[in-house]
Amino acid sequence: MSPSLNTNYKANILVVDDTPDNLRLLVGMLTEKGYKVRPVMDGELALMGAQSMPPDLILLDINMPKMNGYEVCKQLKRNELTREIPVIFISALDDVLDKVQAFQVGGVDYVTKPFQLEEVLVRVETHLAIRELQKSITAKNKDLEVIVKQLQSTQEQLIHSEKMAALGQLVAGIAHEINTPLGAIRSSVENIADFLKDNLLKFPDFFNSLTPEHQEYFLEILQRSSQQKISLSSKEKRQLKKALIQELEGEEISNADTIGDTLVDLGIYDRISTLVPLLKSENGTEILEKAYQVASIQKSTDNIRTATEKAAKVVFALKNYARYDHSGEKVRSQITEGIDTVLTLYNNQLKHGIEVTKNYESNLPSLLCYPDELNQVWTNLIHNAIQAMDYKGHLTISVTHQYDSLLVKVTDSGKGISPEIMPRIFEPFFTTKPAGEGSGLGLDIVKKIIQKHDGEIFAESVPGQTTFTVTLPFDSHSNE
Image (cartoon, rainbow, N blue to C red; front, side, top):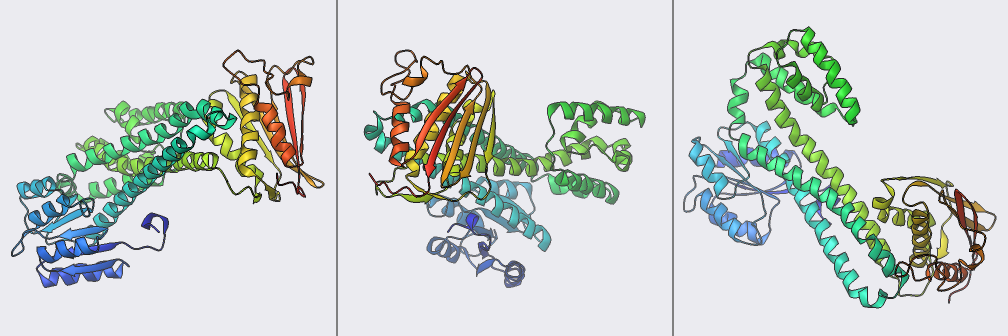
């Protein structure tokens, strides 16, 4: 199990330093925090340890006998097994060129001796968190690669089936649903990288240059920004900015427009009076801007987490839909899970003009069924409903328990099915769609799948409301 999936996992850290006192200090602090720590006193042992059991993070001294830290890092980055391990340099060298060289050889951070234990711990936790996010993205990409290979291997088998036809229609929407969070992840990672590149070396000097009072203001802004979890609409932001700018102008604060924009973007739009002394000070705007840059790192991290969860949801739905059970045996399944899988895959077609209402009875019992085949039923009914509404309207899906059966109703607000056509909708090869847009087998296949479950399907329609009702008995024994 990977660290990102195990909340009890504590990272494995390799600490490299030829000074025993430093080694003991770092090992003691990290061990106390629950990390697994391996100490070594020279570069050669560090390379051997990293290759034999790759750690999650390396703390690396520079001035060491035989092989200095720069050379150790170079060799780590040349090795495919160790190149992705983040390296934090800890050194007494305080020259900017030394720090630049550390980043050039592949280091992700630099701590100057004598160091503060709290600072080392924060940087360790930050880079471990970034590393876990990278691993999570890599894992999701591998899942996508596996899914693509699965789809490619089954393409010949499914090419003439309604399932492949539905997948073909969904490809563009699914790609959009995955590319959107991946784009957000890419943008957020670039934002983090740009901040680290442009500000990391300068930040300690900037913070130390502030007066104690201004340091407190700086930390207050970061704390208040991190506590703001409410997502605001564009309209709400505009209203808050307008009110805040008026308040700032009333306090005779210059650049009220710019400061108001920044504060609202930070999620700070009330209790402004406590910040007025800072905003009136000579370097108040600079301090506010620097706090905004730091806060954007947390925002980018939150964006990555949200986007990863969204992509994972689509991937999970696609994996469930693309699989095929060759056992031929029924399994117990929650019908609502299959319906939600199909809705997730159709999200791109639904979200721009269709309101979806799900009325699921609570505590529904599981059903002994062929879930993959029932997913084809929900796919066909939802797809037909979307087209009947011309991608705008209201889709209602209800699932209830009635006597010894499960009832699923799919209702759309489309133009309806004419009385002349209604008797023929389940006939094979009958379709009202233009040539090339439908095989006429969709509802025929749906009916056969329902009959295989000893169930029934029927439709009712008037202009503005069409309902397909599926009845699935709990005691079905057919196993064709």
